[in-house]
Image (tube, rainbow, N blue to C red; front, side, top):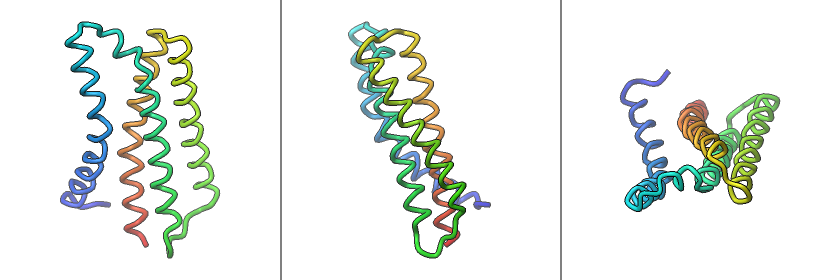
Length: 136
């Protein structure tokens, strides 16, 4: 278990990384809000593309931690983890292509939910990566 100070440091590090993901979306919200075209925020395929990138980054981060010398991890569990994250990358890409081909509000809201899931995994997998690296 992490001490409070260590937990805050890990969260701060993960939040710093995530803020760089959010900057373009804050600008998107500001510009589209100023222009009064709120529906275009939901219909933007950028949400799906960002989800894909986040899922790919967290998979890479955990993979590097697992591959660190001196760390023993179950290949079966790691294989399942990788398969699930790769599946989410593919789902995010399907949403992205769907939004490019035929954007709908339903698909737009679904991609926003996927983006929220990606955000959650950014933090939970980030903490898991930290704990893995701390174990070695």
